[in-house]
Image (tube, rainbow, N blue to C red; front, side):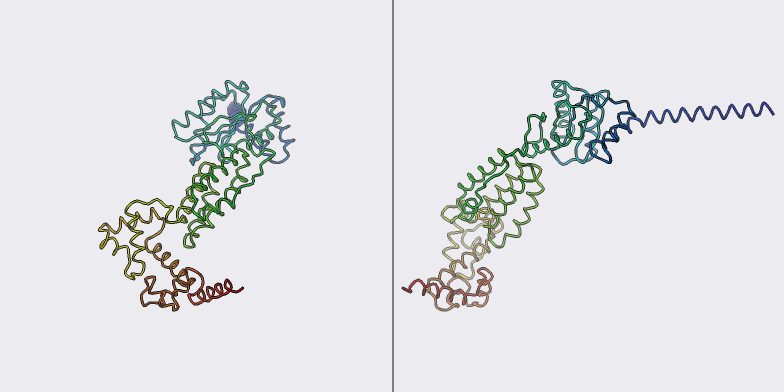
Length: 411
């Protein structure tokens, strides 16, 4: 009996000892994780940050005056979160786990706190990380690192570096930056854009003036360097003033472009998008004499002008009967160079001609105007198209023209 109890007691002692070893082992394993979590929550301002930091220092034996540097890594292109963990492993490998107090992902970037303080060493390490990520994954990496500061100051350092990251909006996103070298959204971030002049250049089709004005706009924006949110506000105002000058049938299409401006990752993409749209609309608004077309499209436009009264005027008729060219090819080329479908271009030509005939009073009857501009005897259809184009019926437009002529002749 005694022997049995002894064995039982020994077994219990052995189990207790194994349990204690397991607890100690688990504690050692999770201790670094808990330590990082405390510091992460302190940086992000979770709960009572002062009490949290005191617990962190006491629990893990950290001196609150420990000098550190903070580093933020941010991929400049679209990426998977698996890529972010690859970035984390790469950074830890080059910096060295023994030199890292915190390595954690926050939103779409990686944050590292290290006690590696030498700037020359830091720059060398960060350049290696950027080159490795570029080589393995093909995307650029924006990196910004802080001044040396005490670990107790990491929340304010984090806020400063987040602002510095705003510089990525104005760059190609492939740089290593020191926080002292970056000023985004300084004291003077106000601009006085020439929106009126830009809109006038678009409306009149003056592409050369427009190109200069847009160049000046983006040059000033990059000089002032407001925060990305403010910069996008200026760009949205610019975009809206440009698309106001497009034809009515395209306004819906261009309105969708607002999302492209809002979602752009950097100023270079916004600049290209707005400039392309601006030049496209300006080209469509330019006087015919100021546009440069291929010889085939010049011939097409000339034939349209000469046959505007012909109600059989169509792309197929013109391509097959006069120009002897493929109708699909001609249609695509015409749209590419003029910015308009053939049928829409002809309709606008006819409507502008109809407006001129009514204003000048050269045709007294609406059916005569319809015949003159290629609608044959279908004056009802002409009236429908005219109202859709101008907003008023031919008769209403005729009355406006009569009143206008009378006002001019009244002494």
